[in-house]
Image (cartoon, rainbow, N blue to C red; front, side):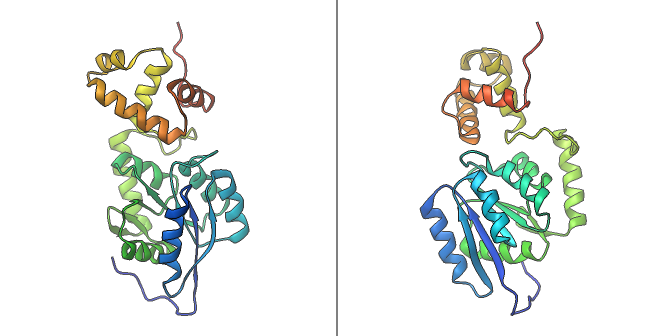
Length: 233
């Protein structure tokens, strides 16, 4: 990735949102050691992050997905509604194409696994601050991003106009619907034609993304947010 030469007098202001202190510290140390970049705020909580961003007005936000109170993708959506010029870079342990699509669709400028190399992260901060979007290590213009989103929309069938947002993948939503209908992991595996271990893996991912401790809490959370509905008898 190559960025355009920036004005040496310009400072890119960055905010970090992650609930792990040592991860934030490591990112902060890396960024503050770079010329032209400064960390202006940090938060470990979704709701607090929105307040912090309103106060500090960063150019770029580095955002985790799994946060207390509000998950990172929902925070990203709110940031883009309130501060459309702020670029958001998602840093997460979940790295699959559909999740990347969901993040970019709601306004994120880049999506990386948390093991991203420091030099790549620094370059990403500089690029998204200039208005670029990074997908699969490719630096894209807004026109190229639009074409990418259209292709992924046809693949996953998620309407860009849908205002009901869920951080779960299509398969996870399918499994959550089965949980709400009262099926066990074994019954879900039979119904969907997948292994019981695969179901367990998806359930673990669902609980982590929704920051819930058990299946019932996850199901209630989804119902309250209107992501899935009880089947009519």
